Length: 362
Image 1 (cartoon, rainbow, N blue to C red):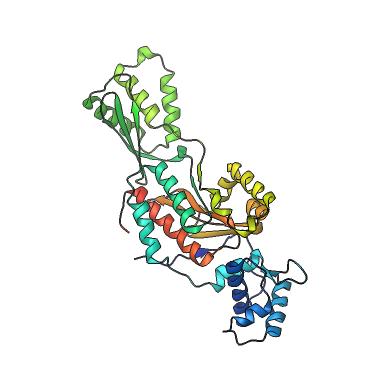
Image 2: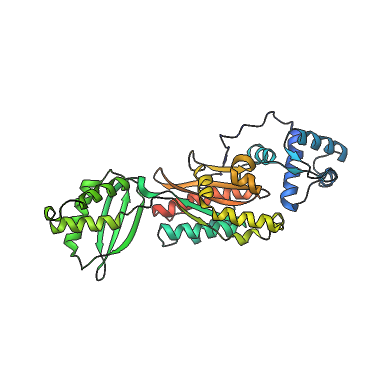
């Protein structure tokens, strides 16, 4: 049974200086909800017309002025209404919004397209990015950690057709990865079993980076000191256990953002695509969302990119057996539907984790 997905506050960002009165909270919630819907500054009159608050436009106007003074709203122009600030959004997310479950239709769609996909980790990352982009109308982003620190539990080499061999790597946390490698000549099944047993016995419990270093040291030994089976074992392990030393980042189609009114300015579009080209900054942002579990939201000055673009990142970690393998999320203008996107990101993260573990249950 799915549990509600709770937002995890950013520990690096201080909490609001003072608690708001219930009336002030209701008005702030109404302003933010209206702005998310319309993308236009919100006036006190438009809040009063919604009904439900039982307050006059004058009273609402006075409260909105107080909220602006408190840093929760801003007024872009003297004659304009108000728009939320990063502090206003955070208060809306953390205190004004009830925890919500993702609707059954979206859960089913995610399961059908991701959890049941018979694909390896790379394809699952690409599918996840596409899925997040499609369901959020923001840009889906997925990062996988560098694999060098993955700890080996076992390695298996399985003969395929001709000179092809399937290498299956099982991490200490139970994560399974595989790749097809090609040998100089066909290798008998018995020799592959012997090599698998030898490598598992001698390298289980070590990180893939440690294994790579040891293999490189073995390869530098005089070939005369190495029998043919050992030389073959080292060659297979060198290819099968090759590690990725840098994080892998998959970014969804940024064209999904071009329909947002915030990107009507061509200069802002240019800055957006320049930001996507600088993958190191995106990876750094996602790395901040890998610890502690739960969904995390970065808005405004929480990160360089969100501040520069006036964007938000809603992100969550994913992994297998307690081992964090990366993070995923949606990146787009701060005027986004947090009520839906927070549970969406949390559910996709949980579903990807199950898919990587080989558990297809919904």
